[in-house]
Amino acid sequence: MTAKPIPSFEIDESSDLPLWVRLRDRLVYLINAGYYKPGDQLPTVRKFAAELCISYNTVSKAYVALEREGYIVTTQGRGAFVSEPDSVSDAPDVNAMVEDFVNNCLEKGMTYDDIPKHVNKSIRKLKREHEKKQGK
Image 1: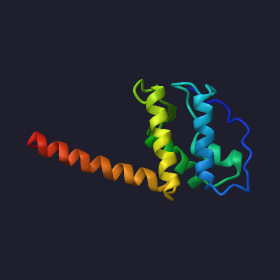
Image 2 (image 1 turned 135 degrees about the vertical axis):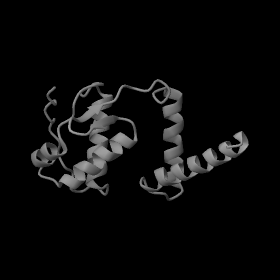
Image 3 (image 1 turned 120 degrees about the vertical axis):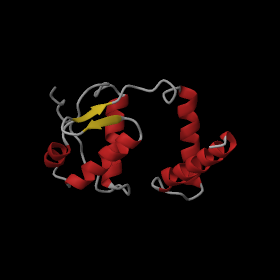
Image 4 (image 1 turned 90 degrees about the vertical axis):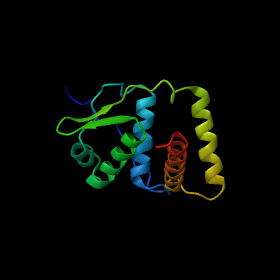
């Protein structure tokens, strides 16, 4: 399977967002818009970095975030592929709740990078509490 070509991507030098976040956002847009469909292979990190003349680490960080967020899956030696949509997380009301949550966090002064840290911390706490109740 061959990766689709990388669509043009203009780097906005005036943006305050880190480049890897802008790249991640662009890829999320391309996935949500249907340019990259479930099962499509993304360009390799090295190819993406070379074509955009940016750091390998920048592209790698964007891919790691995309995988963590469920947009892609990576397979050692094969590459990165667009994930099948998850019916629960793609529910419009769930997406709206998540967006409201993120916006509320930003209004409280948190950064985009702070939010997943706090969410993961809460999830770990809730899991421990659940396991305690279950007697594990």
